[in-house]
Length: 374
Image 1 (cartoon, rainbow, N blue to C red):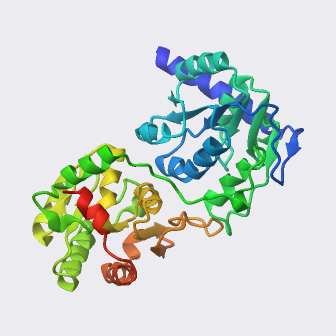
Image 2 (cartoon, rainbow, N blue to C red; image 1 turned 180 degrees about the vertical axis):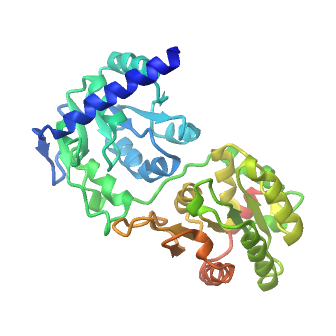
């Protein structure tokens, strides 16, 4: 009963803020690099309470802000959907808050955020978010930055929303650097995925490289998510692995996914000669990409980790909206196979052709990576 009442209250609050979306934007539109903050050591809060791939695409912003404000207090709000990247963002952020989509969580977080007396809050989303709007108001921060969209009234400073059909998501949200005095056109926007030496050593152990050194430079296949248009049939994976082994007999292939799919993945590995990648927390799982020569997947979360590590990727995309540019790997070698329907329309032979092209164009892991495995 209490849970139902809290949910009803949450919906009422959200409906109230949605009604505010008709209010006009009365702040300043920032179109050039101009530091609007009155202090060199601001207390910064970043809102990124959505998905793992959104966090990965935001890493250039985190890095550029930390470089520009090395002594600032910089915190971030994540959620249960992407808290697996808490250790990654701590490379730049001093504190990680976790938001759960309940009224109780919001009220607790609101109280904690107000105690921090942030100077500026940055909404990193390029779609209007009721949660972000709630959190912006909760902080009482004097400066609130966001991309110009339906909830622009909640910001003190807006940056332009670049054309979603022409500009990559990384470039769109990088415009939020402008009111910090940073020109995104001159910034290093390559994705970041920091790995410590212990991460690299543990990844070698997770892959069993001491017992199987031939796995260094393997093809990393990450199976589809539960989102139906991104589901590639299990038989296609088996067919693909068999074709890769026929084309490249000495190339190891590892296949992995979620624990829910463990039985299907084990069956594919047994039938095709691949080895099974261990089911691990996201950061530890992604660290195994360090030793991969190529990634094949329909899942954009692991794609952006690969892009940060400059691991070439063959990506199976479902394009549901022609007006939106797909989230291609950013500034990293890739081949995109795009279907307007389900990715099942993509043949294994097409994936193999893209795989052959990328393997021909990109070298195996360097001696440094092989040495790190020993």
